Image (cartoon, one colour):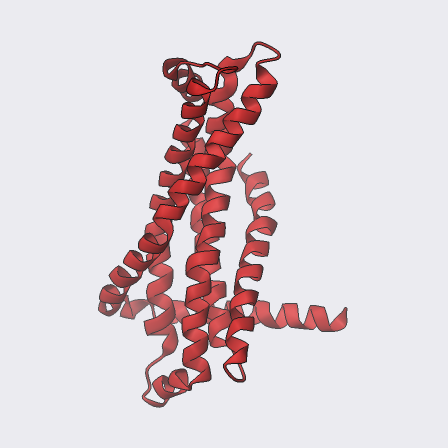
Length: 251
C-alpha cells in the first residue's frame, strides 16, 4: 500500500511539475503556431471519424432502451429530452475523452517515450531546447482548440442517432418533429456548455498525462509499451474519477 501511494504521489507531482514548466514557456507560443496547427490536424484526423460512429450508435442504443421502457407507459414523447440531456451533459464528453485517450493519448506517449528511450529528448536538452516548449505546449494548446469541436460534433451525432431510432423502430414510431421538440423543450444552452467544459478538462489532462508518461519513460524499447498502457489506463481512470466531481459542481 505504501509503494502504491508513493508511486501515485510521485506521478501526480511529476504531472504538476510538467504543467508548471509548460506554463513557463507560454510566451514562446506564437513561435509554435505551426506545430499547434499540425497537432490540431492530427487530433481531428485520428478522432473525428470514430467519434462520429461511436456517438451515433450511443444515441441510437440510448433511444432504443429508453423507448422500450417508455412505450409501456405511453411516454415516448420524452425520448428526445432524455437522449438530449444524457448525450450533451454526460455521454458525449466522456466517450470523446475516452477515444482521445485511446487514439491520440497512446500515440503521443509512444512518440515521446521513443524519443526518450533513444535519447532524442536528451539531445534536445543538450542543445538548450526545452522539450516542454516544442513537444508538450503545442499539443496542449491544440487539444484545447479541437476538443470543443469534437464534443459538439459528438453531441449532435448522438442526437441524430437517437432521432433515427425513434423514427424507424416500430414500437417507438416517434416523428422527427416530436423528437426534436421534446429535446429542445428540456435542453438549455447551459446543458451544452457544461458538456463542452467537461470535454475541455478531460482532453487537456488526458494529453498532459500522455506527455508525462512518455517523458518519464526509463529503460529500453520494452518500456515504451508499458508507458502507452499506463497512459491510457491512467487517463481513463482520471476521466471517470473527475467526472463525478465536475458533474456534482455543475448541478
